[in-house]
Length: 114
Image (cartoon, rainbow, N blue to C red; front, side):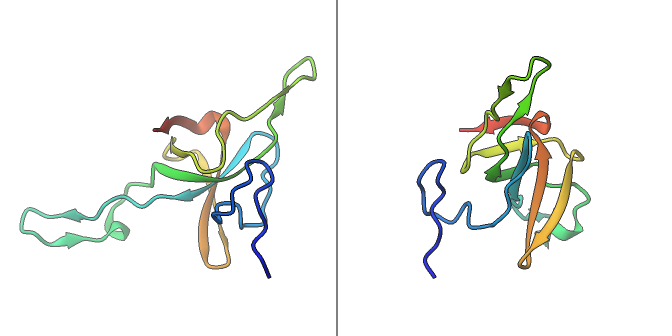
C-alpha cells in the first residue's frame, strides 16, 4: 500500500504517516532523544538513566488552530517537519505502533529550532 502524502505541504517523507489528527491547537511531536552523556570516568550513561524529560521534538501533525472570542480561527504557527523546543512537563505521552509520541498545546512550544 503506498504511503499517503501529507496534503497540507505535499511531502511524502513519512512525518505524517501516523493517522492521528490533533484537534484545536494541539501538536503531535516525535521526541528527539538527547545525546548520550559520559561520566568523568568515560562511562556512557544511557538516556533512560537521566531524570530529565525530553525538550525537543519534531512536528509530525498539527491541529487546525483555535478560535478567539469573536469566532475567528487562529492557525497554529508551527508546521509538519519543524524541530521545536517545548516545556518539560507540558505534554501528554502516547504510544502508537510501538512508537512514542507527545501531544502538546501550541502555547507549550517555546521555540522553533532553525
